[in-house]
Image (cartoon, rainbow, N blue to C red):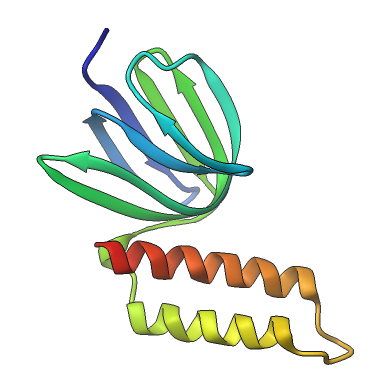
Length: 134
């Protein structure tokens, strides 16, 4: 069994990761997925959350905001709607976005859209979690 698997993470704007890794944790639509070398082929929708993988004894984190995951022999491809490396996230701004989204979700305003507020809260939570783990 191979010891490493090629990981590629890209958004429509840019490629964020292209490395050989020993394993990847990725936010699936219905929960976390752990991918190791030799994993069976898989195609899955992504949710909002934190993708992580180890490199040189240190864990790297990215906030993933939806998209698709493809696992092939020797290759993991993450095509994210949006993604940010943990070190690129302004933690205080992400926390402010999370507070604002929580307030909107709790609001009983007649023009409030609970689905949009929940989606904004999930995106903000993913960014905060990734930034805090760096």
